[in-house]
Length: 254
Length: 254
Image 1: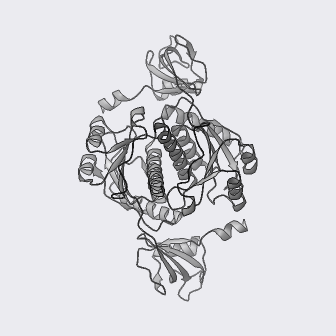
Image 2: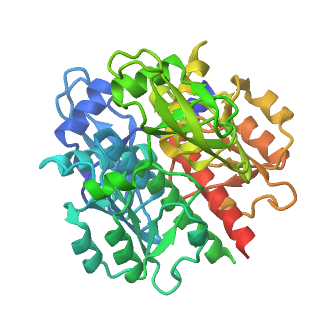
């Protein structure tokens, strides 16, 4: 396993701050506890910082003079900073939230695949209105996924919106997950070259209601089906994100 | 919700048998219990049968003369049978199994998306060797996903194989999930027209080991990356399946 370990990057921490070489940065309390108690890192260990706004930094951990085991806080000194371009295409994922664990799957995968924004939508066939504090938990899931996937751009999550309101407010070209039918297969996406932004619309487990489906088509949102069978919300969200990224890459390599 | 309910199909049951119009078929014990005790179906209700080999049947439930509440077994009479073509392309998913729940996610999505075969592979960086009885549980997950997604073709799951052994035995063109790097983006897939079969290779959480990566490339398995960041096994499996299906559909509509 040694060779494997050596190829692993250093532990990642999320700190929503500006990074500059030489800066001394205090770790937030929960990140310090995680570093010292869970990962058992030591003074002088190398760590990676992500600020969620495209910056990644290598830094050296410090326990501010305290012996590591007794330290209750930690800081770090930034050695180097790397800035990453914004995700391109910038994808906004409009998704009818499935039940808890499954929404976590959607949020993790959206972060790994590099979605820019996530808008939970309330549809007629939606399973449940999200709890009041759902958005705080979703935010924590996004941060954890950002650290796991090393994506320095944290997707922005919005307050849940009514489907019709969200569709009216949406100004970017879009694609929606449709019930499989041969007529909707492999339609061309809206041209990604003009403005590399795309909205992906994923309905609830019971599918978009007929009037929602009609509203999407009337708004020039293109139906897309992947495979021939009924997809759960999680599978549909991941599948459409992957197809959108792949079509964009192919388009831009020709 | 009434309009929604009316559009839902009748409850689905998995019965690995041949279906013919007019046949009387006994429901397996667990499916009968599910129908009568959990779904509380009644004598005369319409149900859908899937045999996992491409056949779907509409049938009428019978409790063999017993009052439904007391019945301990159930049979059904087949009204009509529909046969579906084998999945095309026929995709074999070679995947290093992640931990329990996450392997379930892979299996469910593979069924929804219509994979033909699944081969668990043991890689150097794999998290854990599957338990002896893992394959029985995986089989149940596939059956549940087949019922949920209405896919009448049950993916075939194989016993776990050593990576090298699986690669040597594999005779079909393949694509593997690679660590993101610009050089591997949007490479053309092996031509799907000659033989519409494709192998998808998904490594473990720590990635394919360098010698595994080399063996794949040496065997003309094409690297594919989706997005720019590290994907978990589940996300990678779903993303690659979706991209493979989409590229095939686009290719065949031109």
